[in-house]
Length: 393
Ligand code: ADP
Image (cartoon, rainbow, N blue to C red; front, side):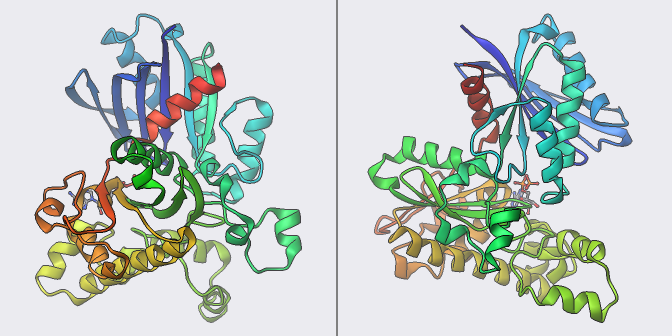
């Protein structure tokens, strides 16, 4: 029997959604609300390939969701709210509690709230989305799909931090890994496109505003660059990624900053923006570097270098490399970053065809490359919709 399932990705000022007819996975409507919290909220959506845009006051997530539901009804995508049987929410941190998607109840909500301390930018907003849907679509079953869940197969040797053991045992301080739905989609799609043999040892590079790399063996995550929180790993748009831990108390003492100030600096003022002083956007950095801006070039160089280092490390974890995939905003669109990253991976058998790279083709490796190199648009929402179906079944 077919079911209408909504996949939801709620950010601090945005909400992305896709309504699916499952199990065929037909997208009935997709869209995004931006600038939530302002009088000029932007709503864009597509129904059967036809796109529309509007501006309306969006004081909060509740208003944004109401707007989405009203549009579903007024455009006759659904005749009644009750047709939507399930809503899947992307939730940032599942901590030690969740390695699978779960049906949301009071206990799940309180655990998501408890875990907000580990993902302060995302878990509270995810919870807000869940509570808004509870009020507006009371008939629908709600499912939480955790960013961390796909990584539950990471072995202890890769998730342990070398701190006193009780921090791990009593407080769950360990590497978790994030962007689970994206890495899971990439693992499945690459296998579908290139076959199991060719994707036995795969590295997925999710390079967006946030970014993480995952080492995937036979479809399972065995290591991932984000850690206890989504701040760890590679340099990101405005996040620092890995730094020497001693820098934090040093800065607190030297500049009289408290942990809240430092957290803000590491999450919002660092990364590509922090190094360049210009922008967190690769397009701006590329333009500036071309006109001789040295700090923009430095930001690009640090970015590519860190990605190369993780690829080298994960090739060791995987004992070789069959396929390297680039995805998300930068991975899918920046031929420059892909070229910079791949330029020093020849020793691994990675060689790209620059014409194919410039054209953002699915396969961009040169004919004599030993490793397959692919550009695959990610689709976190389909993983969320499938997870909802699995839970409802
Ligand atoms: P988020 O993590 O917020 O979902 P995205 O995956 O959408 O982010 O990635 C956003 C980033 O992708 C932008 O900041 C920009 O650096 C990069 N990007 C988007 N489009 C392009 C493009 N055409 N060329 C190069 N980089 C791009």
